Image 1 (cartoon, rainbow, N blue to C red):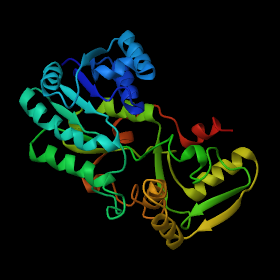
Image 2 (cartoon, rainbow, N blue to C red; image 1 turned 90 degrees about the vertical axis):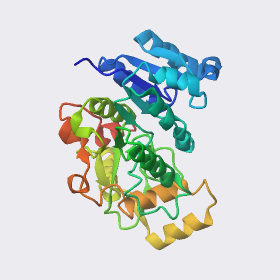
Image 3 (cartoon, rainbow, N blue to C red; image 1 turned 90 degrees about the horizontal axis):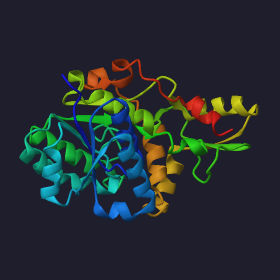
Length: 307
């Protein structure tokens, strides 16, 4: 069997671009659905030029243009959607197009974060996760073959500040710990998420499953993260503890969307939404067990770049 032909929607975004690069690296015929307007945006057109040079086929179209969408889908076997979180419901236009095209062997919807069926904060996240869950339910209802990628947090989120609310770089003197500091979170670099995703597209073990990423070396509590950083800088930091009640109060007092970062910290490092459940017994599959050959960046390696 040859490699599946992959269409990626959202290639000018950070993850979408990495998905296209990984698809090409793994020798898949790679296609990108691109809006006309992207070619006149200097940053986006630079990405598109480099993808085209690397061998990707650029197809003009959008989720809002049904004819171009169906035409693009008819050229491929797999479709990966990497639109941003505020565009997630636009995938409602993609689902009937996949049905109409009739040739898609696998759909990977735009989840790429925490599993929306597992988060325990759906009453406070302004529908961030319920929108993703809604798309998952539609895909299941339509009988479209799928794989969902639960990669937890991207490493470029929170780790550059060592999970500090008002910093851009890791602290050198004092550090805030939310909750008791013992609940573990998970971070994976975008390029590594892309490699795991592309590895899964032709794998029967991931069909109609959630692929979870919890790579060893990327699963740490706040206390453990701080300890790693202290070792690297050769200095102990002053610890300031913010209990759960105080973080919840801050979340309530801070207007949306400025409180979202706090909500995500609460979800991961107090509620344990990334790690409270066992992957296999929940019916999912573990990416690092399925693809032990894939090399990935650990949190310690990433922190070395911030010294």
